[in-house]
Picture 1 (cartoon, rainbow, N blue to C red):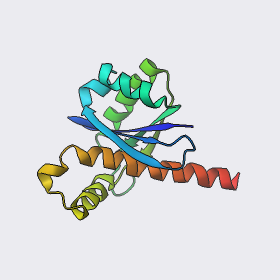
Picture 2: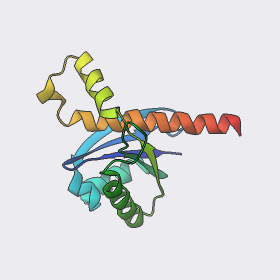
Picture 3: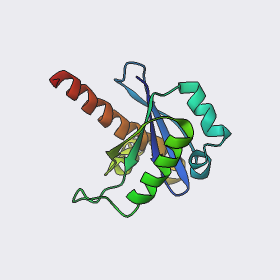
Length: 142
């Protein structure tokens, strides 16, 4: 099972993908948000390259665990992408994934300008890994 993660933002969308075993998430790229939302050629090429079985979208939540103000927009965008691609969509809390992505990139010596564009795909890979780990725990229990 291959999962494709989308960190949908206002300007950019970070993309990450799992390996075929569903164990490891890897960052792929960042595309303009409008291209992902409209399933433009650039995003269709990503879908063709990785052939995912489902899409995992990060859902912004408040620190209290409630859906943040952007969550409704993310749900609408994800529903459109799902209808257009025929792929099911699941959601995962993306709280602090961007903060952690920035910490990782800073540790690699990147400055703010160098980080721009990379944060979104690293963030997508972080919450996809959390989702994959949760799926594996479910399988181990059941």
